[in-house]
Amino acid sequence: MGEVTNNQANLMLNIATTMMKKTIEVNENAVMQVLEGVNANPAPTTTPTASSGLLDIYA
Image (cartoon, rainbow, N blue to C red; front, side, top):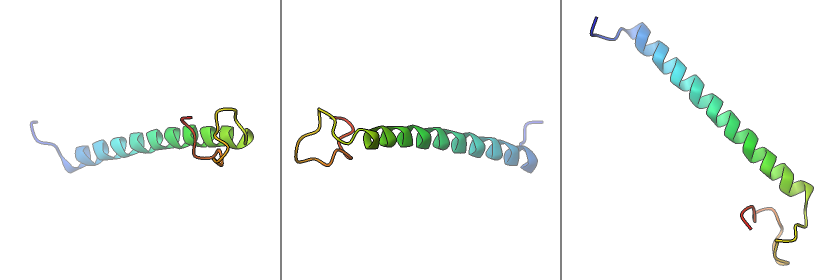
């Protein structure tokens, strides 16, 4: 009972991989929403005049 079989290890690895993929997808969606928001407003008031506005997410 104390040993982990290959099937159990494989199942745990599959679950962990799936959870990581879901987390990455959520993060990608959040990043895309931020980028879309920046692109939708090309001239935010907080953007310096010398900036393109694309990289100043934290401004």
